[in-house]
Image (tube, rainbow over all chains, first blue to last red):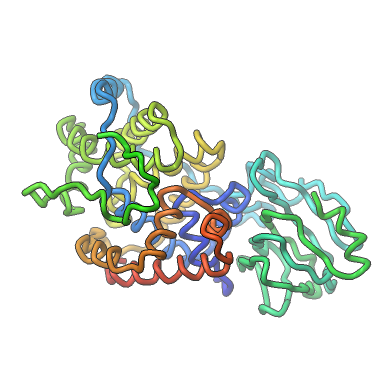
Length: 217
Length: 206
């Protein structure tokens, strides 16, 4: 999997800075797991953050801080073994970044009907912004919509096309409110995406208006 | 010295720079990775104290900027440094400098404790595993600190201010746009431009 559509560098700076809400951070992390180029960019953004941090004058620590610190060292266990990697070859396994919010397995997902050919699941335990999985039947045209704020979507399975291009597994669409788009899913298999939004989607057209209340998840 | 009372955004990006000590060794990333290696190899407490004394106050300022209160910032600094102590053997200078490593640890603790993002560390662990498979050339990450600093100082003030709001106040693009009464798209493109300039200044380090 070598993605063709990447995360906006400004979004990666936000991730490096710890400024993203959890919903957005989850989608970024899912893409980072499959994208060498974005991992490289993130490493640079973190280098810049680290050096900005170091170039600042410090704020003195509490007087007892060093003593308390040293007192903690003897009991601190050494952590020398990295965590074991999850199996990457099982096609049923969701990207690990999604596990806390959707569980580890595609088969175990409990989809909810949202509209004709469209199902969704809201991510568990996300307090900031909205995180959801969307499953859209193959060959289906989604209503034209814009975003009140930002939206970050990554394709997990299947594919879709819109005015921005062809989006296959691993690709992300990092969109803000300026973009109006109408995705059409590719024929064959359903398109499964994970999406973060900071505002409800806005649809135009009457079918869309009917769906609108449902999208205010 | 306490945080001064002026609003942070009127202070130029680098104005709080501490006076240089005559010893420039602390600007050298290799100096700090050597200290962390000593912690890893020999549980060298003196080396640890040097790292703690240099980075602790800086981490504290960073955390206070992110809205941690004074006591919470002290705790997070301790937990960051404890992690360095515990994981020193996993530190790989070919992948990140000590500065970057500590920045990342502190950020993840902030996300978990202050922002309530309980899975921030799990996301980092998953990423670390993947990065462990990435090829690196084995050479230590050496950054031309002076060059990066010049590039920072050369940023036009509005760009420097936005970069500062992004990194030191962990503000979202939408929050920055609102605060500066600018369109969201302009904030993003400005941050992209400053990032491109700083990346160029780090040229060849990655």
